[in-house]
Amino acid sequence: MEHASIVVLAKAFTIGIGGMMPALAIGKLVAKAMEAIGRNPEASGKVFVPMLLGAAFAEAIAIYALVVVFTLK
Image (cartoon, rainbow, N blue to C red; front, side, top):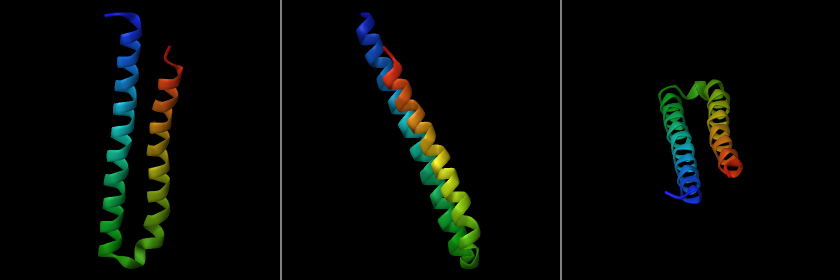
């Protein structure tokens, strides 16, 4: 394989996996938070902020993957 095609393939895998895994994590996180709120609506204030922080941290991982893609040459 040529060097340019290897770089393109590395970029594709990086953004593919780097985008897919945080998306799955955020989906599971929000689903569990909604389940917890559904079971105990009074706890929505206690569940919402940690859920939002977890989603932000998982989204940061996707942004790191995007940065890696842009830095690969």
